[in-house]
Image (cartoon, rainbow over all chains, first blue to last red; front, side):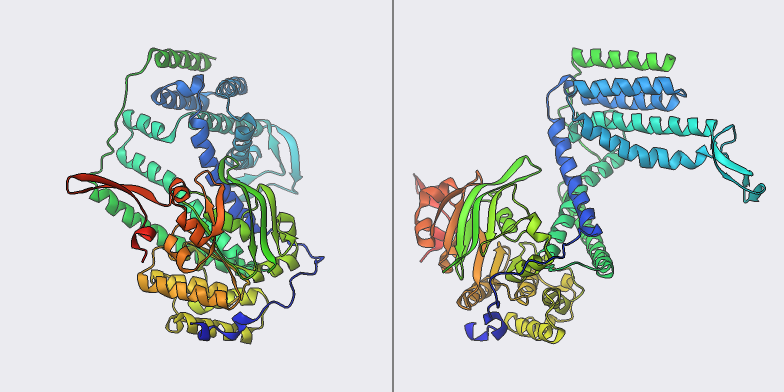
Length: 308
Length: 269
């Protein structure tokens, strides 16, 4: 073997030191994206850790918490006024405080998601092109009204009072629904949520998809991060956008192939252990008196919000 | 011989909560064969990734040839090229390491990154393919390779960069005996060629065969002992505590018999 070693491998580097450069490296977009993926793993870990803590809200049975979630999401969707929405928001906030959750971290996520899936989605409806009404913020004045497809574009375009109110309502509904979901998710271990959904007669196929997707998300994120590290270990400069796109395309194809293979293997493993389209659950105990009390209190508070 | 890698009180935790390595201090000399051994989850791979600058230690100091390696120094383009050209890393899972369309592209990726001209990069790639016996795989995509072939290509992709230090994470894991022997011979040849070899493994026979200096990691992610392979492998108590050998109970006729067991100690001759 020794005689076969190529001569270039016997060469030593010309210098043991380097000249400090003046050019710094920018963190490329792809690297930032990968860090985001890594954060997904961290978030998952934090969910597992915070869900295992001990507080008043953590101790409530998962079935009560899932029913509470569904009931309150319905209430949030039915309310048509800002005040009850704000009061519900305050109620969720106080529950989060009692559950000793990381309020700042959770609300950052709530605001981020609500901005994209609430505010931005609803924003076009604030304009008088979609929602008619009194213009409170004029934006553009045209020489004359136009007709485009099914829309009548008026001479003056602006945000209407009714439209603005609609955007605020939708955003606050999304915010409250997200905050409720995070509250339950971060105070209940994931297997408990699945067990509660099973008890509440959610179809097995749906539960299976949630469970496997949840697990695969972490495997996927870990693989993506590892692939990125492998590339980083051989990267000695900045990558141009074309190369970065090529690498991403190649890796997506690889992940797709790997996912398909893993999916087949997991299904074979499930079949070999007797999988028969049914999720079997165990250890479903009776509800304690404290769970019933909490359930009744939540129900009464919910009715109060409905009545408002 | 000068120290090429120096770690001083290195700590790293995953998610700022799960400790992976705690207070690791060690020096690796130029041209040395060094092994980090420990049970699964003891922090071997994390330590190697820190040595390759892929993970940044949460505490402690890492010096490569006396130059501090940190997030700040990696922002310097010149340092990045200097470091990546000198330290190569072979991942445990070859699948994640191979990301180019074909084997040849894979071998050319590193040298072209180091701005070595195309002709020389090509020469290197063909020479490396020759010693690794993978010339016939030149145009194949990585997903059409067997486990052993992937490992050869992964090693080749790092060798074409001609690094001074080769970090190998579980190099013989999951390989057939012939490929394992080939890798051991290759590692010895590279060591003779002056390369510094650092491997993370729990394969005690590999450590013995390569006559390495060994750092034994405990399950508490700390260094238990650093010494020659002979010294470490003879210390059965430490190996037992580090979960690298186990106590084996079985019957001889009617009599129950208990002894320490590892595949390395058991098969040693």
